[in-house]
Image 1 (cartoon, rainbow, N blue to C red):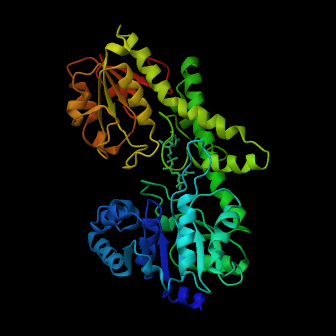
Image 2: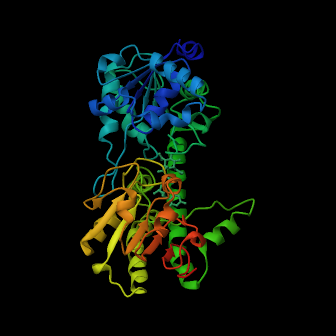
Image 3: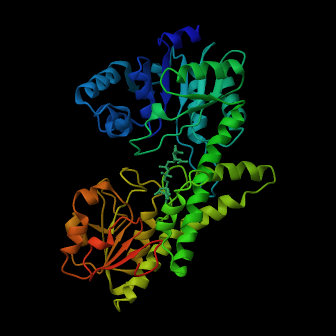
Length: 447
Ligand code: SAJ
């Protein structure tokens, strides 16, 4: 009986898709004594994991104490096997789907990875098996897309096997919110399915939140990421307005954050990147449009966030003008390429637009990021080489590395009196030498 196998942790749990969601999840089950099967079609990804290179992605799961840490790592390697061979999916009791759900060029859902993964599962699914989808999809997709493919096996969801949706909520790079501490939402095709999935997750996470249906669970993810996209867009739009009004938006956000209720701070920046926030709202829009509805917020927010990289270049141009320099004849240093702080992920990073546009205008653009060697066609160098003799230094990502390596002092040691564009309110202007023309997004010039 599956329930018993879950309770005594003898259930074989397979996670399909070992990306930034699936790999930590498979590791979490292994750490809690389950036989965890990590399945991924990419040999490159499997080699990366087997060489231990993906360990930073599960850092938040591991204890800081080295002895305890190596115990956990030993448990993971003892209980977890990763493979791209379908044979490992035989005798699996629980299948968890964590494959990417990207967008097509026309911003409609591309469910090809999800569909193919469900076809794979349909070959190995047995009576009494539990299937849980964690990949972000639009409300209704588990019943419309996943269920019919799984039933190609001849087994029926709700009668022969259990089917659930539980949105992944991983916060990449967060040390505070490790997987087991983030409440797990669970919706099922029926109450038995939901009960078993809740029982499973309650073995590995602190809190499980059952909801009334698959659609509510799917919609929860949509709401969370649309809420984020819209609030970031609001604050990005306000950054332009407040600058003109001569008001420091960062100070205003801190002040508003003292309200103990009904305000959640979001911060302006060079744009919104990553695999989720720029993409997920379009899944909901797609579903709404199929019903003849629209969600203006989705497109409005996306438009505002997409334009931020151009606004960063506009600020750089305006600041260089105050030094009687033109953007075309200026040299640039760009600090930070990844989509956000302390992550090595460049998916949909706004840095790509900033650098691509800058290299169209200026012949001398050098970039540096401690997490990636990607340059988007610009020159690269060490941190020191990147900022040396530049007319304009633009910080796009507030990596801890920069402060840990004395970025303010390095900029003060620069011989050239450059312009410094800060898109993250990262620098303490008081620590910068006066000749540096500092400009922070969301603050009036000279503030
Ligand atoms: N950003 C801002 N201002 C802010 C917050 C973020 O400009 O106030 C930018 C970041 O720099 C980054 C982008 O938005 O470029 C997204 O960063 P993020 O931290 O908001 O999002 P992700 O993609 O790293 O993770 C999000 C999270 N979703 C929410 O916070 C609602 C995470 O919890 C989800 O699990 C993840 O998407 C996902 O997988 O959906």
